[in-house]
Image 1 (cartoon, rainbow over the protein chains, first blue to last red):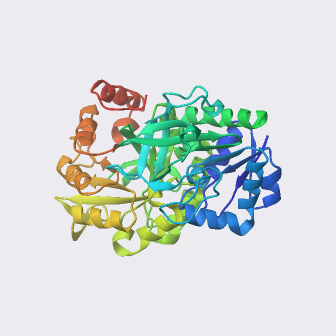
Image 2 (cartoon, rainbow over the protein chains, first blue to last red):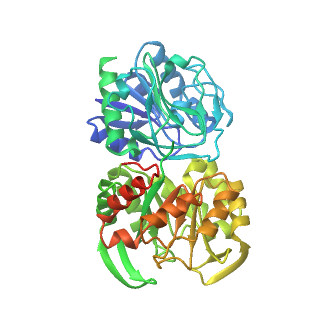
Image 3 (tube, rainbow over the protein chains, first blue to last red):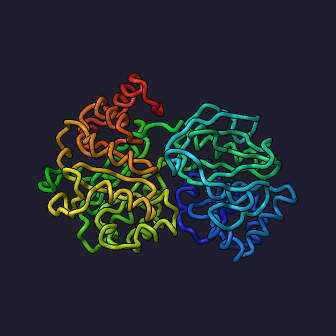
Length: 200
Length: 246
């Protein structure tokens, strides 16, 4: 399956593309809004700040392509900062795509960034998290989404309080962790995501 | 809760893993990505590649290594050694390193940590601090910098470091345990994760570093001799009650 990986200029998408290939997909990194519109699955990933990522997506029109996908029921997956981009205003500056309601706020914990392997606690059934409840996945972030509608939260982890780890709402899904850096468990997540987007 | 991390460190020179005593009599130990994959299979939580040919101009072999590691590994890895400038750091991150470790360039070039953090986020920026008797040293310990390690740690975090790799130069290679005073003082002074480094000989030493406040522990010689020691260390730590990924 072809997977459009949106490029907003913040570098390193190589690990994610390699992990998608291992999961059997054909990822391609693109700044082309039509390619993002037409692919069976679109992924927004990367690192850095919501503000610069959102600006990068807006420059190329990929932001509207992602909104079009979501409104027409075509799957969009956000990973790490890409998941934060699904939401609204960020305390780090800038604003996301607004596909899901709620702000992105700085983590309030003794150790920030939240860095390392943490245990997923499933909150709602989700095809993307099939067999992942109770598994450890890798996090590296200082900000996190605070969904206005908590029913979109499919998993949390504990880091001086609950931190939203995964969300899903119709064709829009997100993972705050890095599946491409979460070993065999992360590979299962990506395989689930491909199956989910096939059935969407 | 977030698990305590056990992080093997691989020394590389010209794109190969090397082993030697005090940077002399270097022996070729094989392909870094192959060894890294082996550690990953044995349960490494993360990896560090340290380029010990840092003074060489030619960074080609290192960038090629990072590119392959990014594609083949499915755990995070940090690359350090010889990062002299923002461009050095950015080129490693662009090549696929999850984090870049900066040591003396962070001291010499104000603004370097901040610029790396602006481009890739603080979670991608590790400040490596080598210390002796609480003082920052560089050049493998030969150059005392006249700076208090705890003060420098605070400043580095304020500038954009999202993690600190704290090495006691005197403990390094002794296998007598980490410098707990140094580790504890720095972990207590900053809010970012601290990786203890230098002196690991057994699981108890890693547990002591965690008790002192470290979120992660770097290991080298104890696993390079026998990689199977890695899962043993992790299960010993788990038996001792530490939160460990198994």
